[in-house]
Image 1 (cartoon, rainbow, N blue to C red):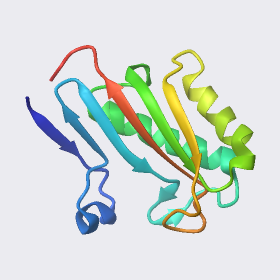
Image 2: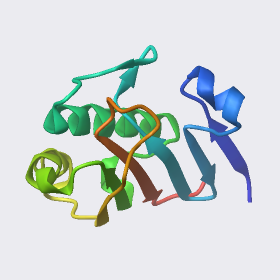
Image 3: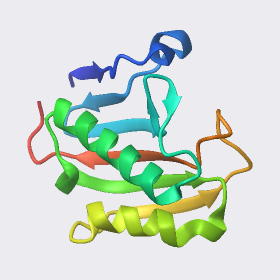
Length: 130
C-alpha cells in the first residue's frame, strides 16, 4: 500500500522526525496536535478554545490527506487538568456530536509547553483508499 506523509510546515516536524498526518491506504493517523500558531500558544489558559483550535487543525490535516471529520473513528485527548473535562468535552462535541468517534480523555502531568492544556490525536478511515 502507498504511504503518504503530510506536513504542516511546523519546524518541529523536521527536528523531531514526524509528520502532521500519515496516510496508508484508507487509514489516516493524525499526530498529537496542540494549540500553537507560529510557535505561539493559542488561547493560553482557555481549555475550551484550545480544544476548538486543535480540532480545527486536525480537520485541516484530514482535508489535506483526502478525508474529513466524518471519517474519524477515534480521538485521543491528553489533558493537563481532568477537572476541566466539560470544557474539553464541549468543544469536542461541537465537532463530533453527530459523528461520535471512539474517544479517550486522559490526564497527563504536563505537555511540551506549560501553556498547552490539551493535545489530541485522531485516526480516520476513508471510504476509498488512495
